Image (cartoon, rainbow, N blue to C red):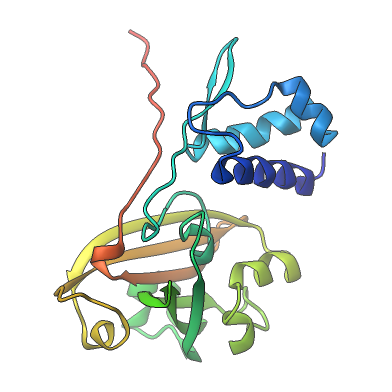
Length: 243
């Protein structure tokens, strides 16, 4: 079954949950019903349900079906889970979002920049700053470094939209793994100039290193969040170890 079919089912089920069509604690329709609705194989449907389970939307119960466990969160909340772009990790039932391009240029990973980004010294990079707004409130300042030989042809105009959409849909890049570190750091003059800080003297910083299917580090991003509008949420599933 093509990947697009799996994505279609996953997105459709997620939308039904987020819209309340499948309410909290409700059982979603049976496998046979959904297979008929989507004209798909059982394996494809199960892949979509497993993805929803991994993101905390549903929980499978052996022999009983699949129950919705997702609940709406605060509109200011940022969810960090899978390998997503910032626009994807913004609130699921999102209020108006916008991205402002602050800076776009080309750089070389010099001796000071290479340890920060993890890119090889001398590597050619695209450096981008973007300001993210939710409900017209400036809440995130992104500092993006993309490996130029991988993000071929990236422009200021493309960076103002979805960079991941360009990389995946137009360049055919397979984005595989992201490693994240979350820290709290002192506010900088740039943070104060761009973000609504509400009197805070620190920011929540999400530093992400992202690899393609060949294991090449092609992106390093530092997202600086206004702390009063940031929460980290994760989903964990407990597996009992054999005695």
